[in-house]
Amino acid sequence: MAAPQKGDLSESERKILQLIDAGDVKEVDRLLASNAVRVNCLDEYGMTPLMHAAYKGKEDMCRLLLQHGADVNCNQHEYGYTALMFAGLSGKTTITSMMLEAGAETDVVNSVGRTAAQMAAFVGQHDCVTVINNFFSRSRLEFYTKPQGQEKEPLLPPVLAEPLHKIIMTANLNPVKIVMLVKENPVLVDMAALEKCYQVMNLLCEQCVKQQDMNEVLAMKMHYISCVLQKCLAFLQKRDDKLDALVKSLLRGRESDGFPQYQEKFIRDCIKKFPYCEATLLQQLVRSITPVEIGNDPTAYSVLTQALTGQMAFVDADYCVTCGERGADKRCSLCKAVTYCSLNCQKLHWFTHKKMCRSLREQDADLDKDTPRLKELKDDESDLVMETANFLQELVLRAEEKVAAAAGGCPAELLACPSTSTEGQSFTRD
Ligand SMILES: [Zn+2]
Ligand SMILES: [Zn+2]
Image 1: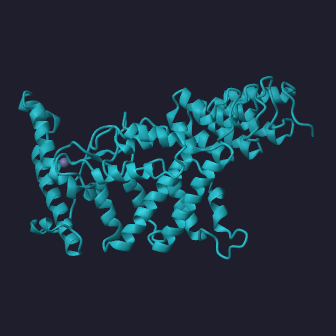
Image 2: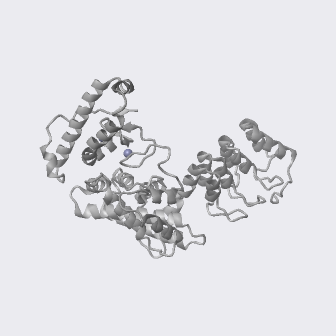
């Protein structure tokens, strides 16, 4: 069959474009199955049915068209738009992911030299930008699970591919989160495994720089993940309490204001160690962070997040102060000044937050000094219950630290805390 020509549509094909607009999945399915329609037919602008469905944000329709063999990389549009570009413009992350899973190329440009991610950013669809910029196909990683050329062993043992792919795909670049992703997979908490993983990440970084359309964003991400994995490896080698010690180092706030300066310095170091110094992204990042005094905004973490995920982070969502996950809905019940995604994250943070918690509470009280006490009571009618819960929470957390200290590796000062049961927990949900 000859390749479809622009505007050369049969009656059924014209009909199907209308049905896509109307969202009539059943009828479209029937027509596609009847063979009266070429799934990659082109309208007068060179748009395929899949492009129409993606642009209109019709998720079911996109899935159906792909099942019927729609070409996700068809590039006959008059201005060089692809289905992925239309998906990005639509603002639908599910459709954007679907196009990527179906093999959409991310580095194709339209007639004015813009990629899908750049077009989505231009119209403010930042979540789609994040999805595109963080996509990395599983098959590209699986390449390293097979011996190449003279190799007897593959560079990456197949069992490591899935957990490593999960880390590569994360849009949350908080180093604590990445260490947690390592920790949750026992196969990764192993020196030989970490070594293989970071070496593969370095190769991927190099590949992203040297490929025809250099992808600096992905290269930086691969490099950054490699740095975190190397840090995990260093802690496994040297420390008894291993990755927990790394998490604590990353979270520990400095005396003066609780700012996690080890984390800040670590991320700055990672960026500066990027091996391709001519990369414009590197120069831009270094320019953004160098003049900032440690402890001030923007943090290296926020600069990196914005550069790699395209997300204007920290604007309207609550982020977990421990791991950086979005949508954190739990607050420290004592100061109510910090949010967490889970009880576990609160526990991890307590050893350092407890030093700041009181002064955060006092700051809050200062702000409220002029407002009548009555208002506060109204805001939180269960004050007494809360106070009891807060007291218990503090005891539980201290007891847990004592247990951790007994297991080794905790500062001596914590040994002085009162002993109590580790049962029970309290948390406020706002
Ligand atoms: Zn968290
Ligand atoms: Zn607090």
